[in-house]
Length: 370
Image (cartoon, rainbow, N blue to C red):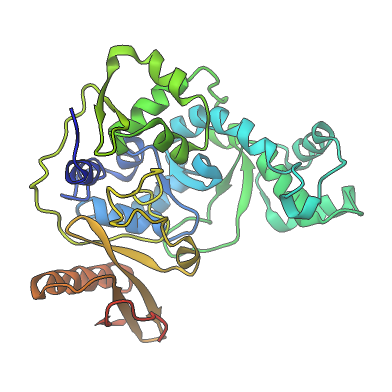
């Protein structure tokens, strides 16, 4: 069965709860979507606001404090907000790939080349121990142990070599404190789960992002061995083809969405995983181009109109005002523009309730800088 881009678009939006906001708690949504991108403080909160009803950001802060949510480096080597169970069972799959990074010649201009990886790891384990430690303190220990090396590179190496996570206050609502790091097992009070099969992780990916190719799965996870893992799923997956004849896999118990379903305007945050989790992004980005990662780094975010990336926005604040500036990628109809304005005002009310809001829609392609 061949699937159109429109079916893939609406199915992705449906599974991501971007067609209709869900009545789920933050841990439930993180479980369903295999985590939320959380490289910065704000993105997971906007992701939850755009996907769930009556979202209270204080619940995430409380979950980080009581350790029912965790911020940990996982898929694509980036920080994700996940449940403790997922932190413990996904990390063993990701960790071997992370550990390869620091001793490559391209890492910090070869800063770690020539050192024994196991010796570096042992020093990191001894330094970090079982208690959280700030990046500044870790860097000071790195400088003492390796005076002839860049201490920042040694610190980054430890953060790749050791299964670690970020502890509060980093990640709480409105708190962009510098990271404090802890080893995963003492913080969560449980051992890593080395028995969680890769195929189970991929099945969950399909339920959240599918139907998808094995290259999509690899793009999402940055892992290899997709085809053998999918083969082990047997009749728990079904196959389709896309309009280019490529094989798409999907969970056998997952439903496809009606391509005619209306897609409301949604304002996503920078690094939203709906834009980052496929090699072929034409199901959500009309021209299939890579997401504007450089713009994301500048906290420029994305707007979905009729289900597709159709504009970008950025919020500028002063002591008293919050201004959301929008640059469309195409000409919007009056109805579409009104819907974008309404959602933008709702987002400002969520993010900046104490500042006077304003929404500005610029000419298509205009620069967002004020």
